[in-house]
Length: 105
Image (cartoon, rainbow, N blue to C red):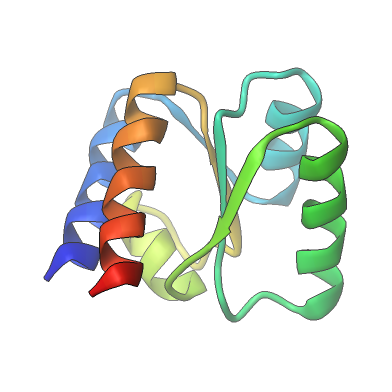
C-alpha cells in the first residue's frame, strides 16, 4: 500500500529531526520559511484547515490533507498530530510524490 510508504517516510524524516509537529511548531516552520511541505490530517477541523491553508498560501508553502491525526502521530512516534511540516526539501519531495501516487490509484 503506497500510503504506508508515505507514512514510513514521515517516520524517517522524524528520526532525522526534519519534522515540525503540532500547531505551534508547524506554524513557526511555515513563518520562518523552514517548511517545504505541510501535512494536515483529514480529520482536522475546518477552522484549522482554513488557518493553515491561508498561512501556506501567504508564505507559498505546499500543503496537503492526508490520513488522520492518529496515524500521522504514530508515523512520527508521537501522540495524535493534526498537522506537521517537513523541513527537508528532499524528504518533502519524496513524501509528496508518494502522496500523489496514492491519490492516482
